[in-house]
Image (cartoon, rainbow, N blue to C red; front, side, top):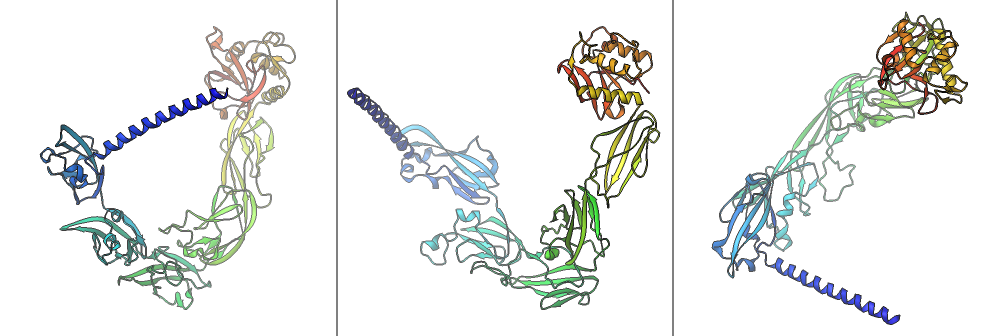
Length: 607
């Protein structure tokens, strides 16, 4: 056995050795063939306005084997943007517009008469657009292709392999060889200079310093402040690297010192009114910049100590004496715009409390039912009040009643002491409602009630049925909660029903017989025909449930059966968008959603 195992081992080792040899031969041939390619690289990148010669990318040893007169250059049909370059017969490429192009190089070798073709891919780059702020360092895409520090790295001090120039002195080459550094406030164009050619490689958009807000408000009798700034780093509170270019503290001034006073600690809001704060900056390159900020001094006051609102509803905080620029916030110093975007928008975001959020414009929106005491600031002045968030609602879609009944509409989620609520009926002839929510059912039909509670508006449909129809619906719901079975054979026995016997047997208890006071119940089609002949039909197609009342009968047709209107099924609408039916598929009496498909008639036995 041991000998056989050794033989198998030698066999597999031999196979492995042969495979390894074959792989080595194939790999060697591939490498050898790759070495004879004329092109050293398969692609190149240039900026618009720049040029290159394809022969610059040839392998010198292979180029010496090429018949010079056989070299030909052409734009390949595979090119995505054939017009982005201009190609000369000698293989010189001038970049005209942004795009990608493929150049086919066709040639013959001195010792081989067969024609060879290789492809050289060129990407033409548009000038790079870069956004930067004062003091920021930027490495441009052009530097990866034309490194301004290359020759200096090789030992020639201060001399770059590529020369760059700028449209103004807002940027300079960084001495730390990290690209360019912004030292001014103006936009800049960056050019690469090659012999007599000047190529635009980048547009730098400088985000100059600006106030965090376009306008601001500050309340009297609050602490001194400085307006928030963007796009600058001041050396008084910065911890950047040592070679960073800091922006010196601005020179502050104010237009009307009776409204806003400049002190050693900052600006003080002295009296109600409007004025302007100015900040003057001087950049390292000498650029001057003067910023102007309109400031309104306010005197906000709390008008109520409590705000009651429904969850999801927006209400303004009860504060007077503000202006359109006023800031509401949970934190004291957010008046300077800590939550704002750079455009000064004060409405989208704000502060979060336990049960509500406050937007910067003072709008409160509850998200959970509850009561809390909140503290917030308006233009830097502190306020406290009680916030009550409610969740007014009615538990169902509809409120079912019978004619002559009076009862209260139970609205949930109200605060027992502080909520305010009002009611209105769209059809008082069907259902009237008092100021306290007591509903009186006047006649059979439906009416929509409008409820307003703590700022929230919602609607409840009142379904008014005849008393016996209402009772019939309740009876069918009760049957659906017992143990029942579906059977056409035993349809008149206790606990057994089909769709028509259920309706007939229930309505018999309330004086409606559909033509048969005792014995075998009529079919669904028979009940439908009786309703038609006795003027009980209210629709010949499906109706929305908001137009039905408990006790209404819904007739369905699924196939042509030769019976009245081809009726094959009947259900009773029992209120709140629900029906009760003896279901053959479920083998029981079920209480489920009212369906509108295949309805051919709806009847109201009692009006």
